[in-house]
Image (cartoon, rainbow, N blue to C red):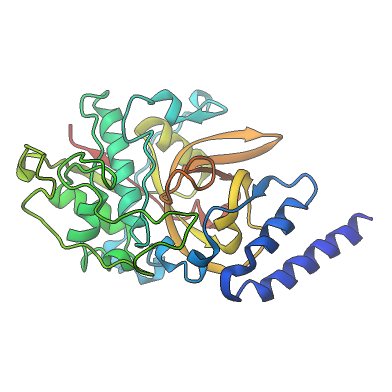
Length: 337
């Protein structure tokens, strides 16, 4: 019976792999397939208006690893590992809930800026944690996305988290909240796309203009030159779960680049593992902690698709088996305080 059931599931997956390349990705078929698998680890649902899914390149944004030159590869940093001190579960949104950036979810809208937003967000978290909330500010993904355009990648058309970290080390990073927040020096300037309607002005947004020497928020009184925060060390993290856990526990969230498939767009809760659909691209997220549910280890992560996606903008993904490559390309940095 088990063999027969497995063949049915495999057949459905192969069938959907064929139809998933058609317009709108057959969202209902994904939802039905995922939710009908007995005792599956996650549930699917509608996160986006189907018309927004005809081209999802704007929801990705990480340039693949093989496009990174050798000189831009970050050296690994060997954080000390004390497995006995690591808790079985850890959620930085609970332990550092008073840090503004830790509890905020970024929204890249129809711009492939996840590489910039996730890096800025992780650095914001680390700055708050390292300073014991002495510097409790949201830092600007807009500044990296716009002003590292050409050096880090192509702005809204994608970039490298590694180069974003290097940019913070060399040039610093100013403050800046979400669109419409009126927070910080350079808030995000791209209007969020309502996820339940096809109301984006463009299929893909143009990269905003770089303002390297001035704030774009006229109500912010601190000059940009006095509003910059720097990293003194940037690095990659070895792709071993216990090393990643130690890094997050000791220094704060890390940036992870993962592969995104059709079904991930429909994630609503539970522990994600790839189930069906084609590869859509590479995407940057923040690893915020870890845990275990029903014997399955997971990473707790923050996405950059707004708080109406997934679990309020968060998601869980299987830990320890490099699900969707999430453990392969981990980066971080240590802030100057």
